[in-house]
Amino acid sequence: MLAVFLKTLPFFGLIGLGWLAARTRFFPQEGAAWLTKFVFYFALSAMLFRFGARLDLAALFDGRFVLAYLGGSLAVWMIGLAAARARGLPVAEAAMEAQCCMIGNTGFLGVPMLVVLLGEQAVGPVLMVLTIDMLVFSTLITLIIHAGRSGGLRLATVIPILRGIVANPMILSMVAGLAWAQMRLPLPVPLDEFLAMLGAAATPGALFAIGASLAGRRIGRLAASAWLSGAKLVLHPLAVGLAAWALRVEPVAAGVMVAAAALPVAGNVYILAQYFGVAQQRVSAAILISTAASIVTIPLVMLLIGQA
Image (cartoon, rainbow, N blue to C red; front, side, top):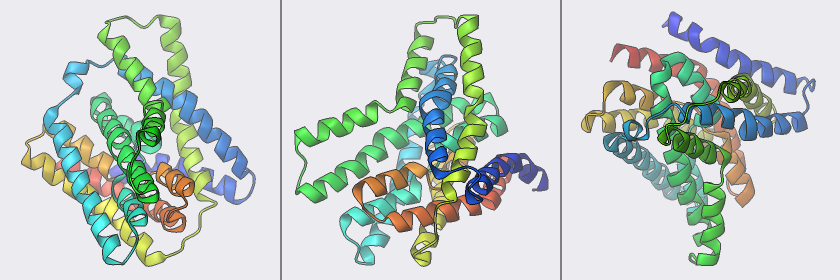
């Protein structure tokens, strides 16, 4: 356990450094926003393109993997929705809480950390998890909230939503990289070195930005936020793990899937909550609590994966 913890410690050390820098106001909050934009649009996109350009699309797609992750995640999403509705919350708030229960920080934390900890074999499964989260569940929550507020869905409303999701830089960079790989084009050495140099900034930049963004968050609605954090860190990996076992997903891919599901609540859930004006305090607190708790839970999950 100690060896696994020590492997993950540098990643959380970078998060802690970002938090400390922002907390002491050495690194201003607007600086965190600009750093996040740099990582999102440039560094992480370069990393994802380079990963995608080295993958075989036919080997990447595994129907059982997709079904297992979708099935396990949807089950947790429905549990989160039902728990919120049982507390009397309206549909929009209930859907946002359900989103907290199963959308992990795969882009900013999972891609850099899991590839380092689990090796290059983790690249394909992590990208599949990231794609499913963005294309399926981000679309789902957006459509539900729009439908609830407008009394239904209209084509004029749906098209811009879908366009915005598909135009996400992470989606575009992955698709572009996979398209490059499908054309079997070699990456010119200068381009490969440029992408490697830019992509290398993704890991420290993303982790520092996560920490800096956490400095401005406050814990409120503790019971609800603790439930959401527990669902994300415990229930979600358990559900996808059972689904992967039931569908006999290849062991390495299943381990990566479980590790990805064990990641803390993603920051983009708060962006959605803030944009729609729904459950911002609960979502913000769940991100803070789950990220802090994951310092312990992620090494434990990694240890269990290694023993499976």
